[in-house]
Image (cartoon, rainbow, N blue to C red; front, side, top):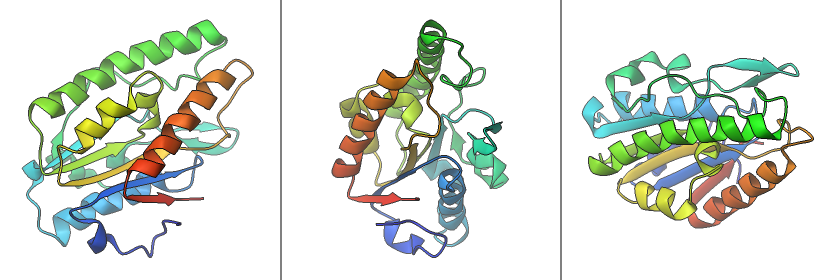
Length: 195
């Protein structure tokens, strides 16, 4: 099923939802719109919504927008329970000249991402929003992610699922990422493509 700007957000409250797709297909935009819907239409309190934003800063690669954070589309999300890490996420494939650099980037990212996931798990909220799940999946286990998701009543997350950001040394990473996303698509009750 395809997710679009006309999708009915009201039916996603109280459910687990995953949107997935290629770069530049609106995944972060739709995630921000869901946060906006929760705050403006569903009257959730800011402290009931935890946001884990794994995305790197907005950048361009081969004329495509890569990354971008929820706050780039809806700045009131900053009033929610934003669980932040120190520093920035490194686009692992794009900021590497070889396989060794790519895996170093993945390890640096995973340490930051894992710390904020643990923080959420120690103090879960009714709503969990995760932007750019694929960055966790590079080293993280699906089981841990699912246990985290299941601590919320409403989950909305997005993940990269495509082939536009690849290189000759990232084929294995892309394959692992693809298989883990396919597992999530089968597991999460409401999974929608953006492409």
